[in-house]
Image (cartoon, rainbow, N blue to C red; front, side, top):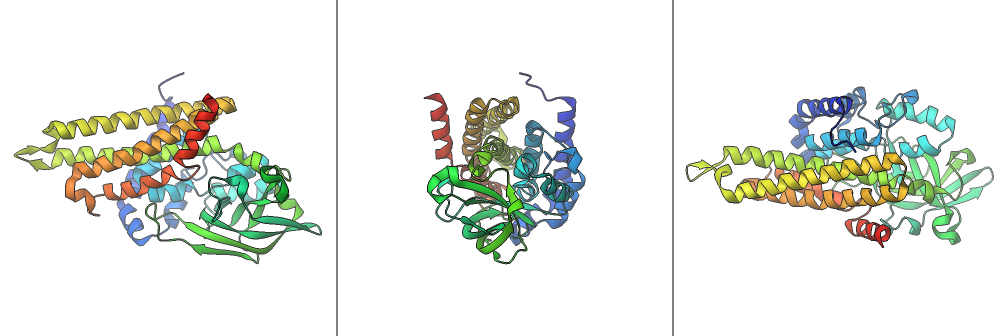
Amino acid sequence: MSFQLSAEQRAIRDAVREFGDNEIRPVAREHDEAKQYPHDLVQQAAEYDLVAPTIDPEYGGAGMDLLESVLVTEELWRADPGIGSAIGSRGFGSTMIQEFGDDWMKEEWLPRVASGESATCSCISEPAHGSNVAGIETRAEKDGDGWVLNGNKMWITNGTVADVAVVMAKTDPGAGHRGITAFLVPTDLDGFETTKIDNKLGIRASDLAEIVLDDVCIPAENVIGEENRGFYQLMAFFADGRTNVAAQAIGTAQAALDAAVDYAGEREQGGQPIAEYQAIRHKISEMATNVEAARSLAYRAATHVESGDDDVAAKFASMAKLFASEHAVDVADEAIQVHGGAGYVTDHPVERFYRDARITKIYEGTSEIQKNIIADRLL
């Protein structure tokens, strides 16, 4: 294993970092306070191939591998987690279309997502079913040559801005996880109703919604992949998704660490910068060590996912997400401590990073779920 990024990978990282520093950071606080989705920045990011970067070049994407995608995610979240989330999740669900969708689905939707014209959303979680995907209650029933969908989806990223949704529904309710099918559902269909959720703790610039499916009719051709194989199709992407969440956490932690280092060098107490005090130096050294450890684990997870060894990839992806998300919250907390009272108010960004980091311990499987997965692979 190489522990150095290639010249091309460094170029990707540096380009995203420049975009983040120049375009995202100056407006981050404004978007957070206004809970404003960054439509213009999404379009700018699409011009740099930062929207759904893993989409194949034949559909207008950059065709990045997972490690390159991780670099993009990390730098977007380092600039600002809320805006980074909005840009990075713009194509949430497009991987299902690319991997399992029919040619017409790919040709119609992937170029629009890659260009920033359209957004996708992935409708999995429900009010009573988060990490337990197998327990979903949304139903899809056959009706002539098509399907009728009914159900309630919750915590759906891009719910009010998406043009098309990948909806997981039970097509054989008695079969548990073996009876779930993925459907391609345009969001302008009758019965597809969205309600924005805007009272979030963090990542406030991203879009989140509740979705109600009330007799939504779609043709038979809108099944993605195979009927009753949706659960297994979804599982194919969890290692990728969890590795990317690890990158989100690392980007947030790095931003908090950067802010703490800068503040420690500027703030004076007792006639010298607080960076001269051992207590502060120890905090920063521990923060930096945990960020680097998380980064190394995430990069390793990405290489395992790319290798195709599913069991090893699942273990390392869960390890990366668990370690990075837990320590992102810790690092952001310590960054506030370094700032003292100044870190508790919105004059400095560390309070935002603390709020933003917290979600990484929950979605794409909670920390407790990751521990179960790791233990399963070991025991």
